Length: 205
Image (tube, rainbow, N blue to C red; front, top):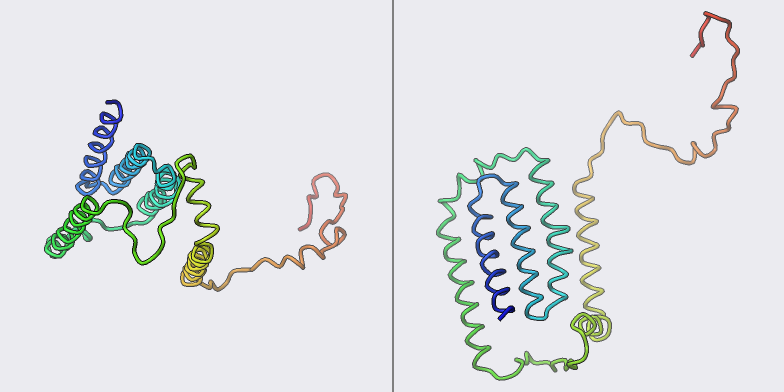
């Protein structure tokens, strides 16, 4: 009974916050509603026993992606009125994509209910014991069977990060760069000069 109440509560808040994310006029409010949707989606994942996905939603999506959106929206001077001007033009394409996604979800639900047991996609399905926690089972699979795929995904993300840094890097003229070796080799007697000025004379620079 408590699980059902929690499910309907989380699901209702997710749907309401998702709708408010789309319809909010203030982009900062839209990002805040999106963060609320992520938190409640994490609650739904905990109810179905997917603690790892719930942790990813909170750490990755709320802690990184949504906060990044919030900082970008608040720091950049984006003309959102101009962005919304093309909403009516792309509305038919958005409706087509929404219908396709809804059809895929319904088709998957139909196939899932018709097929008993896990669906094998040409490979052996990993058998997980009931007494093994969800996060431990995912970790064992990632670092044993899918180790090279996991490392390959990390390498792709590393290349993407380096590429983004290279593309956004700009050389500025008239800027004196820092010379670390010259700073380390500098002697105290070259940097400090002791003087004894008389009263009212001051210090010569």
